[in-house]
Image 1 (spheres, rainbow, N blue to C red):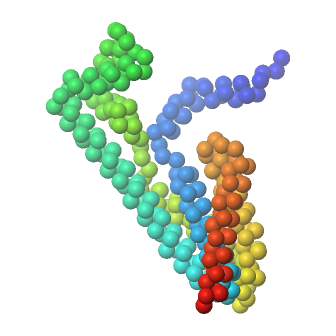
Image 2: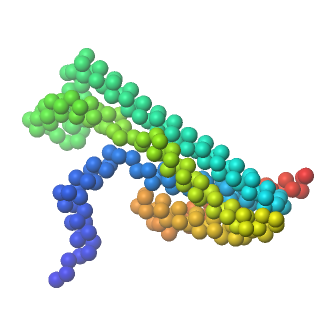
Image 3: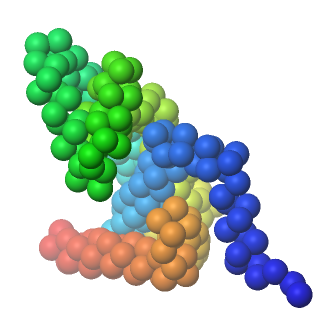
Length: 250
Protein backbone atom coordinates (compact mmCIF):
# COMPACT_ATOMS: atom_id res chain seq x y z
CA UNK A 1 0.00 0.00 0.00
CA UNK A 2 1.51 3.32 -1.07
CA UNK A 3 1.68 6.17 1.38
CA UNK A 4 -0.32 9.32 0.77
CA UNK A 5 2.13 11.80 -0.88
CA UNK A 6 0.70 14.70 1.09
CA UNK A 7 1.14 12.83 4.37
CA UNK A 8 4.68 11.91 3.35
CA UNK A 9 5.51 15.57 2.63
CA UNK A 10 4.04 16.61 5.98
CA UNK A 11 6.11 13.99 7.78
CA UNK A 12 9.27 15.37 6.17
CA UNK A 13 8.31 18.84 7.36
CA UNK A 14 7.85 17.57 10.91
CA UNK A 15 11.14 15.82 11.56
CA UNK A 16 13.11 17.20 14.53
CA UNK A 17 15.59 18.93 12.21
CA UNK A 18 12.88 20.46 9.99
CA UNK A 19 10.91 21.74 12.97
CA UNK A 20 14.01 23.29 14.54
CA UNK A 21 14.96 25.00 11.27
CA UNK A 22 11.42 26.31 10.74
CA UNK A 23 11.11 27.67 14.27
CA UNK A 24 14.49 29.39 13.93
CA UNK A 25 13.51 30.96 10.60
CA UNK A 26 10.33 32.52 12.02
CA UNK A 27 12.44 34.91 14.10
CA UNK A 28 14.22 36.22 11.01
CA UNK A 29 13.00 38.66 8.39
CA UNK A 30 12.30 37.38 4.87
CA UNK A 31 13.78 39.88 2.39
CA UNK A 32 11.82 38.33 -0.47
CA UNK A 33 8.89 40.50 0.57
CA UNK A 34 11.03 43.64 0.21
CA UNK A 35 12.12 42.43 -3.23
CA UNK A 36 8.53 41.86 -4.39
CA UNK A 37 7.44 45.27 -3.10
CA UNK A 38 10.27 47.01 -4.94
CA UNK A 39 9.64 45.06 -8.15
CA UNK A 40 5.92 45.85 -8.19
CA UNK A 41 6.49 49.55 -7.62
CA UNK A 42 9.35 49.69 -10.14
CA UNK A 43 7.35 48.04 -12.91
CA UNK A 44 4.16 50.02 -12.22
CA UNK A 45 5.67 53.49 -11.96
CA UNK A 46 8.07 53.13 -14.90
CA UNK A 47 5.46 51.62 -17.21
CA UNK A 48 3.09 54.40 -16.16
CA UNK A 49 5.69 56.88 -17.46
CA UNK A 50 5.98 54.95 -20.75
CA UNK A 51 2.18 54.86 -21.05
CA UNK A 52 1.86 58.55 -20.22
CA UNK A 53 4.54 59.43 -22.77
CA UNK A 54 2.77 57.34 -25.41
CA UNK A 55 -0.54 58.99 -24.60
CA UNK A 56 1.04 62.42 -24.90
CA UNK A 57 2.77 61.53 -28.17
CA UNK A 58 6.25 62.14 -26.75
CA UNK A 59 9.38 60.69 -28.36
CA UNK A 60 11.14 57.59 -27.10
CA UNK A 61 14.11 59.74 -26.08
CA UNK A 62 11.95 61.82 -23.74
CA UNK A 63 10.29 58.70 -22.33
CA UNK A 64 13.70 57.12 -21.70
CA UNK A 65 14.94 60.20 -19.83
CA UNK A 66 11.79 60.35 -17.70
CA UNK A 67 11.84 56.60 -17.13
CA UNK A 68 15.49 56.42 -16.12
CA UNK A 69 15.07 59.39 -13.81
CA UNK A 70 12.17 57.58 -12.18
CA UNK A 71 14.05 54.28 -11.88
CA UNK A 72 17.01 55.88 -10.15
CA UNK A 73 15.30 58.57 -8.08
CA UNK A 74 12.18 56.67 -7.06
CA UNK A 75 14.15 53.45 -6.55
CA UNK A 76 16.53 55.25 -4.21
CA UNK A 77 13.59 56.91 -2.46
CA UNK A 78 11.90 53.56 -1.84
CA UNK A 79 15.15 52.05 -0.62
CA UNK A 80 15.73 55.00 1.72
CA UNK A 81 12.20 54.67 3.09
CA UNK A 82 12.65 50.95 3.71
CA UNK A 83 16.04 51.60 5.29
CA UNK A 84 14.58 54.13 7.72
CA UNK A 85 11.64 51.86 8.53
CA UNK A 86 13.97 48.95 9.27
CA UNK A 87 16.12 51.18 11.45
CA UNK A 88 13.00 52.34 13.30
CA UNK A 89 11.87 48.73 13.85
CA UNK A 90 15.21 47.89 15.48
CA UNK A 91 15.13 51.05 17.58
CA UNK A 92 11.62 50.16 18.81
CA UNK A 93 12.80 46.71 19.89
CA UNK A 94 15.81 48.23 21.67
CA UNK A 95 13.53 50.71 23.42
CA UNK A 96 11.12 48.02 24.68
CA UNK A 97 14.01 45.75 25.66
CA UNK A 98 15.51 48.51 27.81
CA UNK A 99 12.10 49.20 29.33
CA UNK A 100 11.51 45.53 30.22
CA UNK A 101 15.03 45.26 31.66
CA UNK A 102 14.27 48.24 33.88
CA UNK A 103 10.90 46.78 34.93
CA UNK A 104 12.54 43.47 35.89
CA UNK A 105 15.11 45.32 38.00
CA UNK A 106 12.50 47.57 39.63
CA UNK A 107 9.39 45.39 40.03
CA UNK A 108 10.41 41.76 39.40
CA UNK A 109 7.29 40.32 41.05
CA UNK A 110 5.07 42.40 38.80
CA UNK A 111 6.95 41.12 35.76
CA UNK A 112 6.62 37.53 37.01
CA UNK A 113 2.90 38.08 37.31
CA UNK A 114 2.80 39.21 33.70
CA UNK A 115 4.54 35.98 32.64
CA UNK A 116 2.09 34.04 34.80
CA UNK A 117 -0.93 35.66 33.14
CA UNK A 118 0.54 35.26 29.64
CA UNK A 119 0.90 31.50 30.06
CA UNK A 120 -2.34 31.16 32.00
CA UNK A 121 -4.05 32.58 28.91
CA UNK A 122 -2.37 29.79 26.91
CA UNK A 123 -4.05 27.16 29.11
CA UNK A 124 -1.42 26.47 31.76
CA UNK A 125 -2.58 26.33 35.37
CA UNK A 126 -1.71 25.07 38.83
CA UNK A 127 1.72 23.67 39.54
CA UNK A 128 2.60 23.39 35.86
CA UNK A 129 1.98 27.12 35.39
CA UNK A 130 4.25 27.94 38.32
CA UNK A 131 6.97 25.70 36.87
CA UNK A 132 6.70 27.51 33.53
CA UNK A 133 6.99 30.89 35.25
CA UNK A 134 10.03 29.69 37.19
CA UNK A 135 11.77 28.36 34.10
CA UNK A 136 11.09 31.49 32.01
CA UNK A 137 12.12 33.98 34.70
CA UNK A 138 15.26 31.99 35.57
CA UNK A 139 16.85 33.10 32.28
CA UNK A 140 16.84 36.89 32.07
CA UNK A 141 17.28 36.96 28.28
CA UNK A 142 14.44 34.47 27.79
CA UNK A 143 12.33 36.47 30.23
CA UNK A 144 12.75 39.71 28.30
CA UNK A 145 12.32 37.99 24.91
CA UNK A 146 9.05 36.46 26.10
CA UNK A 147 7.77 39.87 27.15
CA UNK A 148 8.73 41.37 23.79
CA UNK A 149 6.97 38.68 21.76
CA UNK A 150 3.97 37.80 23.94
CA UNK A 151 3.21 41.15 25.59
CA UNK A 152 4.20 43.57 22.83
CA UNK A 153 3.92 41.37 19.74
CA UNK A 154 7.38 42.30 18.44
CA UNK A 155 9.60 40.30 16.10
CA UNK A 156 12.91 39.58 17.83
CA UNK A 157 14.92 39.79 14.59
CA UNK A 158 13.64 42.71 12.49
CA UNK A 159 15.09 43.29 9.01
CA UNK A 160 18.62 44.61 8.68
CA UNK A 161 18.33 48.10 7.23
CA UNK A 162 21.04 47.74 4.55
CA UNK A 163 19.76 44.37 3.28
CA UNK A 164 16.15 45.58 3.20
CA UNK A 165 17.11 48.73 1.27
CA UNK A 166 19.30 46.77 -1.16
CA UNK A 167 16.56 44.23 -1.85
CA UNK A 168 14.02 46.97 -2.53
CA UNK A 169 16.24 49.10 -4.76
CA UNK A 170 17.69 46.22 -6.79
CA UNK A 171 14.19 44.85 -7.48
CA UNK A 172 12.90 48.33 -8.35
CA UNK A 173 15.69 48.90 -10.87
CA UNK A 174 15.49 45.44 -12.44
CA UNK A 175 11.72 45.53 -12.89
CA UNK A 176 11.69 49.22 -13.76
CA UNK A 177 14.10 48.79 -16.68
CA UNK A 178 11.86 46.22 -18.40
CA UNK A 179 9.24 48.72 -19.67
CA UNK A 180 12.06 50.92 -21.00
CA UNK A 181 13.89 48.16 -22.88
CA UNK A 182 11.90 48.43 -26.17
CA UNK A 183 12.40 52.19 -26.21
CA UNK A 184 16.21 51.85 -26.29
CA UNK A 185 16.05 49.97 -29.58
CA UNK A 186 13.91 52.61 -31.28
CA UNK A 187 15.05 55.84 -29.69
CA UNK A 188 14.33 57.93 -32.75
CA UNK A 189 10.67 56.97 -32.99
CA UNK A 190 7.54 57.74 -31.04
CA UNK A 191 6.83 56.16 -27.67
CA UNK A 192 3.55 54.95 -29.13
CA UNK A 193 5.43 52.66 -31.54
CA UNK A 194 7.16 50.88 -28.67
CA UNK A 195 4.22 51.01 -26.30
CA UNK A 196 2.69 47.66 -27.29
CA UNK A 197 5.97 45.74 -26.89
CA UNK A 198 6.63 47.52 -23.60
CA UNK A 199 3.12 46.63 -22.42
CA UNK A 200 3.61 42.96 -23.26
CA UNK A 201 6.96 42.73 -21.48
CA UNK A 202 5.66 44.59 -18.46
CA UNK A 203 2.59 42.35 -18.33
CA UNK A 204 4.89 39.33 -18.16
CA UNK A 205 6.82 40.95 -15.32
CA UNK A 206 3.60 41.79 -13.47
CA UNK A 207 2.42 38.21 -13.81
CA UNK A 208 5.75 36.78 -12.62
CA UNK A 209 5.78 39.12 -9.62
CA UNK A 210 2.21 38.14 -8.79
CA UNK A 211 3.07 34.43 -8.90
CA UNK A 212 6.05 35.06 -6.61
CA UNK A 213 3.81 37.03 -4.26
CA UNK A 214 1.33 34.17 -4.22
CA UNK A 215 4.04 31.68 -3.30
CA UNK A 216 5.28 33.92 -0.49
CA UNK A 217 1.79 34.42 0.98
CA UNK A 218 0.74 30.81 0.25
CA UNK A 219 -2.15 32.18 -1.80
CA UNK A 220 -3.22 31.02 -5.27
CA UNK A 221 -0.21 32.04 -7.44
CA UNK A 222 -2.14 32.31 -10.71
CA UNK A 223 -4.82 34.45 -9.10
CA UNK A 224 -2.15 36.71 -7.59
CA UNK A 225 -0.49 36.93 -11.01
CA UNK A 226 -3.72 38.03 -12.70
CA UNK A 227 -4.47 40.46 -9.86
CA UNK A 228 -1.04 42.08 -10.19
CA UNK A 229 -1.45 42.39 -13.97
CA UNK A 230 -4.84 44.08 -13.51
CA UNK A 231 -3.53 46.52 -10.90
CA UNK A 232 -0.48 47.40 -13.01
CA UNK A 233 -2.67 47.69 -16.11
CA UNK A 234 -5.06 50.04 -14.32
CA UNK A 235 -2.16 52.30 -13.30
CA UNK A 236 -0.83 52.30 -16.86
CA UNK A 237 -4.26 53.01 -18.35
CA UNK A 238 -4.71 55.97 -16.01
CA UNK A 239 -1.27 57.33 -16.95
CA UNK A 240 -2.02 56.90 -20.66
CA UNK A 241 -5.34 58.75 -20.38
CA UNK A 242 -3.74 61.58 -18.40
CA UNK A 243 -0.99 61.86 -21.03
CA UNK A 244 -3.52 61.97 -23.86
CA UNK A 245 -5.58 64.57 -21.99
CA UNK A 246 -2.57 66.76 -21.33
CA UNK A 247 -1.47 66.49 -24.97
CA UNK A 248 -4.82 67.95 -25.96
CA UNK A 249 -4.35 70.85 -23.54
CA UNK A 250 -0.86 71.78 -24.67
